Structure formats: structure tokens, C-alpha cells
Image (cartoon, rainbow, N blue to C red; front, side):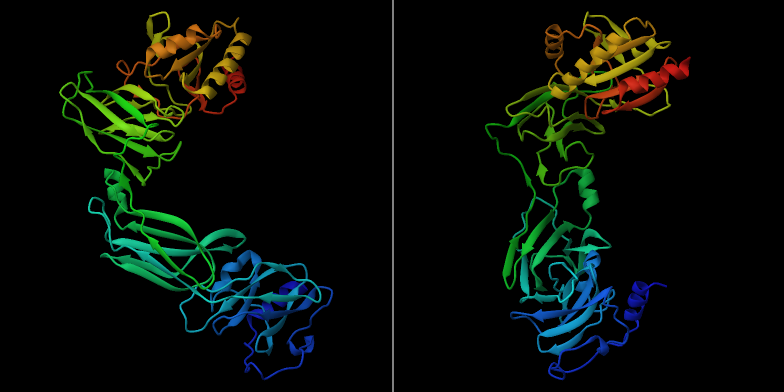
Length: 476
């Protein structure tokens, strides 16, 4: 067992040193400790308390686990001896980093931490815990149109645990059943995360009913009173000059308009399946011809247009300021299934020349299928690269490169193709009125299908040439 291990093990079993603040005035040497202090590995550090604070005692812990500095009986505290009212001394390992906690007895406090410091010879560390602060969270005036109670209230402090930044709770976890102001006393200066959310939020999230979900970081300063108003989500009914209009027609699976049917716009966190819980839009009902129109949708967000279990993804790149988006929404349309080593589902492709065919018509050939849209600049860049790659395989009749547009407006797609020089590709359009599938993925998105109709590679960042060569090699 090496000396460092012996040192840490010994500290765990040390009996805490107890004395009155003035019981010892003379400087303490290494002889005052119950173990040998190797001057080549360890050093005595002096800790000086400055400024007004609550009565307590320091707790010295490793900086990579500063969470232990917040607790009276949690983690290892390095042995220290008190010299006078405001001074302590204790041995630390040379070159290691530490923080100082300030433990206040009989108080429900988060505790106090110094800035990290590195143990060096003849080191004197000055620390100032300061006086505690108070937080008030006001829930006395909740609106009537969202779900509020019961609310779970949680306050956590930012700290380091096992070398990783985290948020740690110190018992500030309450369930609020009626309008009130929550008061939390005894907070040290630092960064906290406050979370207040209705208890049965999963149900409301599924139904897209507005509910309280207030989560934010807050900075607490020394010896301050902090008052926060609860932030409630609001249904966005205002119309700004830069807002978006989304209009369309809802159809049933037989492609007939669906009147008097609910449609909604649901914002999402960009490129995720997580709903935004701070932004809501009123649900609409289609008119007698199945038409709907959302006016005043915030630009530069990702959202879906939904009816029942059918949805169309509108990516942030499409949701530009002042945009007017027209689309068809067909109830029963499914998300295009993409599973590696599984058969590809069939699609009906409308070609630029006016003809149509099925994806299954290409069985016997290796297919590179690239989904894109005219409003997506990164898609256009990818199409240009794919056109160059297709030129390299232009003499191979057993390989076909297809660009499949997900544009809602066919005319936009046709105009873009007419202006392009992508002459090595076959250009197709995905008509939602003819297909049972939509692609609810970030684009550009590529799928490589072998000659047996099996998906062998897929993704928004795959190396198409590399994956294609693998497939061709395995098929020989």
C-alpha cells in the first residue's frame, strides 16, 4: 500500500478534533497529527476565514468531488486543527486540488464552497463563505387556462461530483397543491437550477394541454433576497410581422377532404422528438372542405402539423420569416420506415418528365435514394456532391442515383431542377396524395438499397461512396 493510500485511509478513521476556538494559540506543527507527514508529498496549509458569516466549521475536500463540501456527514473531510477563532491548519497532498466547504450546524443550508485551489508549500488560503441568501418563488397568481397543481418544486445547486459537473438537491423538494409563495432560506452564493412542473405532466404532454413547466438556472449572490415569478406557458395568439402562415387541406386515407376535424401545430426542440413545453398554438378544426390555416406561427422553429397520429415535420430551415407554407395532410400516412438490413417499403415516385413509377421497379439494381428539398441549402450542396459521384459510376447500368424531393409545392421543385446542372441524377417528387409514407427526418437524408431491395445504409451524414463500394463488393 503506497503512502497516498495510507494517508486517505487514515483520515477516514480519525476521531474529530474538538476544542474551544481559543484553546490553542501556538502554531501547529506536523507533530500535532497522528500520522507522518512526508514533506516531499504533503504540506501543511493554513486556512483563514474572513468576513461575516454564520457560525460553523470548514470542511476540506477534493475539488473533483466538491459535492461532499455541502454536507456535514457525507464524503471525506481532510483533517484540520483550529489555531484561533478564524484560522485552521491541516495537511494536504502536494499538487492536488481542493475546495473548502463551510458547514453550519443545526441549519438547513446548502453549504458553502471556496474556489478550487492547489496545495503548494507554505500555502495560506483565505476563504469567505459570506451570509446566506433567501429565494422566494411566487405561485400566487396562476392563470386559469393551464394545468398548475399539484406542482413539484425542486431546487438544486451546481457542483462537481466524481469529476463531473452536476446539480445536487439538498432536500428542497416540495409538492405544492394551491397558490402560494415558496420560501427557501439558507442558500449560499452560487448557481442553482430551479424546476417547477405539474406532477402528472406526462399526461398533459401527450394531450398537448398547456401545463406549468418552469426550469431555469439562477444565480444567487451573497446575502441577498431573491424573488421570482413562476413562468407559465402561454398559448401564442399574437401575430408578428415576421410570423409564418401554414395552410393546407386534411384528407382521409381515401384522399377525400375531412371536414370538422382537429388539426394542431406542435413545436419541437430542433431536430429532436421532444416537444417544446413553452410554446403552444390553438388547435383548429377544418372547415367544410377540409381546409385549415394557422396564422402567426413563430419563425425559425421546428414543428409538426398533426391530426390524430398523422404528422408532417416542418424543419427550422423551412420555417423562415414571412414564409407561407402550403401542404396536404393525409390521415393514416405513416413515417417512412428505415431499418438497416430490412426490406425497403415501396414508394410511388413522380418523375420530372411527368411519368411515375414505383421504387420496387428498381429491384435488381443498387439504388442511392437521397431525400432533399429546395429550401434546404445543405441539401443542395449534397445534391451537387452526389451528382459528381454519380458521374463516376455513369457507365454502371446496375446503379441508379435518385433525388427524391420532399417539397410540398411541386412547382418549386421543378423550377429548381430546371436551373440546375444535376444531369447525372434521376429527379423524383414524393406526392403525399399518392403515398402512405412521409419522411419525418432531418434532411438531406440518404438511403442505399441493394439489388435485392434491402436497406444497407442510411443516415444524414453517411459516406455514400464508401457505403456504396461495400455493397457492390459484397454483391459480386
